[in-house]
Amino acid sequence: MSIKRIAIATGALVALAVIGVTIDRMTNSHGESGAGQTLLGDVDLSKAKMFTIRKDKDQVTLRPSDAGWVIAEYADFPANEDQLRKLAFQLAESVLEHKVTERKEKLGDLGALTMEENEGKFTPDVTGAELIVTGEGETPLLHLVAGNSRSSGAGFGGQYIRRKAETVAYLISDALEIPAKPSDWLPKKIFDFDAGKNLKGISIVRAGKPNLVFGREDEKSAWVNKGSQIKPFDANKVKRMAQDTASFGLAGLAQPGQSPKQLGRTRLAKVELSLLDKRVYRIEIGEDKAADGNRYLVVSAELPTDVSDAELQQKVADFNARFGKRVVAVYDWEGEAVLKVAKDFMVGEDKH
Image (tube, rainbow, N blue to C red):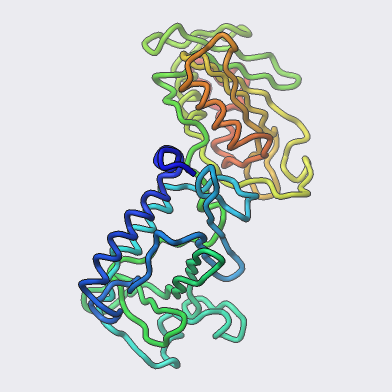
């Protein structure tokens, strides 16, 4: 992977490399780990090839690819690199404030036991979350057990933590942000545009209901109704729907083998979002809630063939490479933003 490609597409890799330099400098001045020393000791995060986080029945595996850091449990769907970068910096900056215990029998009181050490079972406030960092060829670089937060006593706050190979537990000032659910590592948003500045048109097609079509000339223009008759029409409700749709966040991905019925996709609404720069996003979203309470959709991007803007072409290509034909979830209340009928846009009407 070229340096330019890393800098543009995989900022987290750059962050890890920078952190590696920082850690070298810190360990040279501090020496071996212990109270007052860095959490990482002599670990160089720039050599990290995999982050594994597990707690109870949950596990997430993050690893680099040519397109950036991905989530293994989601068939290498792109991970939230800002979140990974934040964790990397947090690991680099954490200092072991003081030793809490070096007695193995006290680790359970701190929530700093692994499930393996707890007879293979998860017990709240006894077993903690594990963070495992491996390098080339799955060489172990770091294995931490993050225990309970300190919730009482003078100067309460922080988190108990230990290295898996040691029975010594320390306190760090800020709890590590290491959720173990794969869904917690997804990018926060589906779309990268600002509805107020970029969105030009919205159409909604639902079986058995009149089609809805709304548009405007530019970002300063009011939304107008171009579809079925709506009187009295409330343009502000279209504006709110546009903002809510552009803010769709990822709640998860469909798992292999799940049926359309399980995903609430036996009936589909079709939504088209057209942008002022000529990009078009198409959404097919389930009319019903899935078994997990979310709404599942497929989304794709297009650009007219007469548009030669290389940056827009790359944005569309990257978007489709990320989402392709994947079925992704949004929270129910977000999905409802586009599951509208004509009367939802009348003055004074707020419900179907």
